[in-house]
Amino acid sequence: MASRPKKNFVLLDSNNNDTNHVFSNAQPRGAALKAASRGFTSIRLRERGTKRVHVFSGKVETVAAPANRPSWLPSTVKKANVKKIGVEHL
Image 1: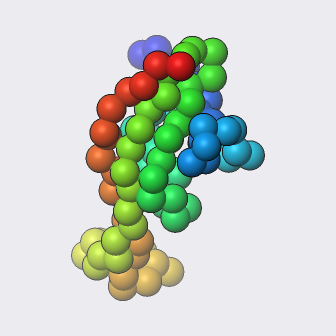
Image 2 (image 1 turned 180 degrees about the horizontal axis):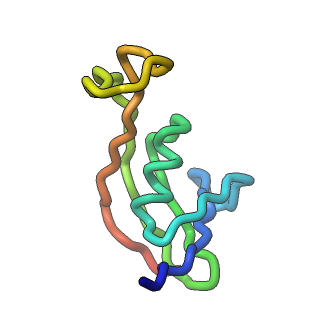
């Protein structure tokens, strides 16, 4: 079973400038989920090594924890959700 290589995605600000936030994942959606869980709502991720910018909208919801949760987990947890808007090319 071969694992997929991780890619690095840099979060862009509203002026298309790089920020200090870099998220690593094999897929852009995974990196966007990480960004959304940290509170970003308008997510523009530049894939390092390519000229692609993945655009997402994100939000964080508070939901009930699963029934089989461990004792240290609170009864409500935050869950990130993203929706892909598209891909732009630089």
